[in-house]
Length: 401
Image (tube, rainbow, N blue to C red; front, side, top):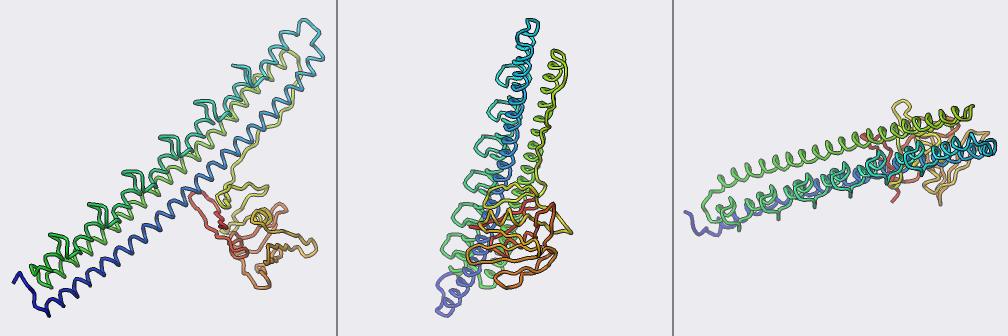
């Protein structure tokens, strides 16, 4: 029969063509929306990691720079006292000169210069320089550069680029492109084109299109799963690499500092006798971190995990979100106000009040080192902020915008 269809057959053909078109469109809508969700999630997680690693590197830099200033001031004051005591004695002139050079962070090859060089993020090939570059997405071939490109749908041949193109009906040879064409009665050599011309019966066309669309859906889901598995794997490798490099950098700071101080203090004792008390360098990274609008926060009392619940310092976070906090010592209660919103809770109580309405807490508010700690979900329930948990980096993510 392969030619002109009767009117009744034509109507039947048109109905089947419309049915297949609807099936394709639903398939496209589902996987297009899934891609958009996946891309938005991958982009958010990338932004979170940038904020976390950059924030921790900045803390490391600030602490090391403050420590260097402390050491320089300490040793300069010590040199001044030694110079006042021995400066007029000829036998001590060379010793004082040697000591002055050793404690000078700008004197090349001196012990203090070694420490200064190690903590300087701009000194090529040193630990801080390496850390700075590895978390820089614009530094070619860095760890973060590789992660950014993996999640970038515009970076040719990247994971997200391949994923986007498979879901794109306009991208030649992509999975969705092939399904669109097979479903299109006007695409030469397609299944629906053959059916429209009468070269396939309805039964044969239906069977073939069921197979094509079913297999297409499986291939699309497989492509999606593979892409997101690759993205997650790359993110995990990036987190592990950068956190390990962060810790390694801190260890190098500490060991370089210790070596420099040992050399300086040994020289001082040899030349002038006596000792000098030097405070240790104490730098730590919170096991549970908090991001607010992509800003890494630091607390005197960091978040804690109690009975499987993450508790965060209420005052520090509420004030960061623009609320005022008042503590009632007699009631052991806290009142927070922001605009027209008033929050009230008591230590040890599993219920709080928001403008008079009850908010049930997963665990009661409690004091940790004199800080009021509340379950992290209380932040979103009380002030309307969006709260997520990034398990890979152990970070509470709070977004107000």
